[in-house]
Amino acid sequence: MKTIVITGYKPMEMGIFKHNDPKVAFIKETLRRRLVALIEEGLEWVLISAQMGVELWAGEVVLDLKEVYDINLGVIPPFENQQERWPEDTQMVYEEVTMTADFYKPVYDKNYEGPYQFKAKDQFLVDHSDGCLVLFDEDTKGSPEFFLRHARRTEENGKYTILYITPLDLEETVEELRMSDPDYWSQ
Image 1: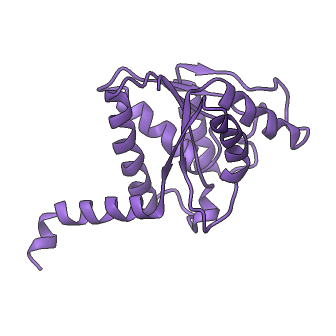
Image 2 (image 1 turned 90 degrees about the vertical axis):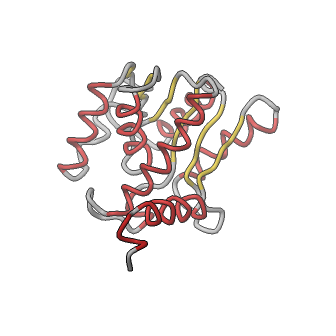
């Protein structure tokens, strides 16, 4: 895969209400590990719509990886000013990610008008990628389902790959990081 979309839950869907919640670091590390493996297999572009949560965190991870790897970040929000009602610290992250991305272009060059803009954004991202990496748990429904409807339809035609980050993947990252801490072994 040369181009993937990364998406997943919004922070509140995961019980995350502060930007510095420790869970965010584990999610970002899991994203980083998966992305490094994909980059080493030939990944060139990561696309996000820069929604709060997994997408913005993925944007931050890609920008960090750009210091070491040849990887590009495309930010394709559904409409202009999607961040204007978000918490201020999240707006600052959004501004940083969109300003430093390799490509930025909203699907609609106007402000929010209706849910059709999200549907069009999902279809656009699927149409312009080879696959996706989605933080999703089949037992916990939420916002990623809307994107997955489009992705699964395309996957059924044999032209799309859906990769998942599951709660088990996150638990593995937490455990590996815990075990790599020298203090863990001195208890």
